[in-house]
Image (cartoon, rainbow, N blue to C red; front, top):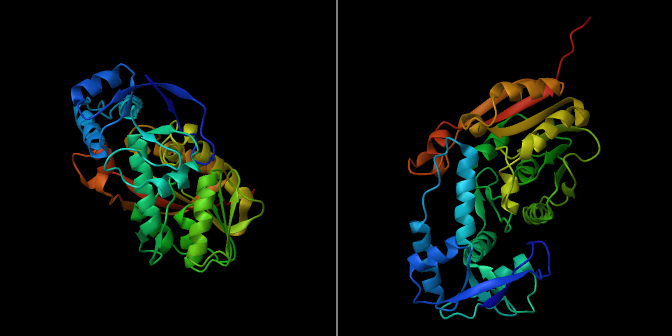
Length: 360
C-alpha cells in the first residue's frame, strides 16, 4: 500500500495533510479489474505510462452503468456524482515542483502551480482532475471568443466559462436604462459586456475569490480596469444604481464542486436574494435585469408561477421579457443528457422595474 497526499482547495497554497491508502497499478491492469477495485472503494496510484492511464480511465468510464433517467432529477444527479467519485479514484503521482514521474507524461508544472500553488512534497492527484486542470490552463492561455465583446475572455480553473452565447447576447442587445452606474451581481463576462456598451462605472461582486481574481484580470486585459471595480461580497455593494444585473445559477440544488456554484443555487438562495434586495439598490428610474434559463421549470424544480410570485413579493414588476432558445451543443444533441429539457429550454432576460403603487 502507498499513501496519497491530496491537494487542498484550489485557492489555497498549501496541500492538505489528508492521506489515504492506495493500491499501486500499472499498464497490466485491465479495465474490468480497475472498475472492480474502484467499486470496492480502492484508490489506484498509477505507475505505468501516462497514455495508458488515460486509456484506462476512458475504458472504465465506458463500463460504468449509465446514470438513471433525468425524470427524477435528484436521483439523476446522485448517479452522476457516484460515477464521478469512482472515476476520481485513479490517481497519478506528483513529485515536488508538480512533475508527473510517468513515461510520456505532459509538462503540468505551470498549470498545477496556477491552481494548487507550490508543491514541496510528493503527492498525487486524480487523473480526472488533472485533465480538467490542463484543459482549463489551455482555455486560460488561448481564451474563449465572445462575439458581443469582439474579444476573448480567459477563464481561470474553477470559474464558469462563457461558452453559451445566448445569455451574453441578451445583455448585449437590451436597451440600457442609463449608463451612469451598474451593479453586476455574481460577476462573470457580463460586467465586461456592460463596460463595452459604455456604462461609465460598473461594480461587479462575487463571493468566490477565484471569480473575483478572474474578473479583475479579464477586465484589466480588456482595458476596462479604470471603469470596472470587482468586490468580494455577498450580493450587492452599497448604494443605488441605474442598472442591477444578475445571472444566478439556473438550477436549485446543492453544489458539490467549486464550479457547481455557477450552476446550482441551494433553495434558490441567490435568485431570491437578488430579487428581494434589488429594489433597495435601484435608482428611481432604474431596472433590475435577471438573466435566467427556464431549464428548472422543464425539470419540475421550479414553476413560472413561483418566479412571478417572488418578483411581485419583492416589490418589482416585469417591464419586458426577452427570450431565446438554447443554442449550445447539449441542446442540439439528441444523445446528450437532459436533451428533452434542454431542447425546450429558453433563456430569458427579465427587465424588472419598481412596482407601481396605485393611488388610494
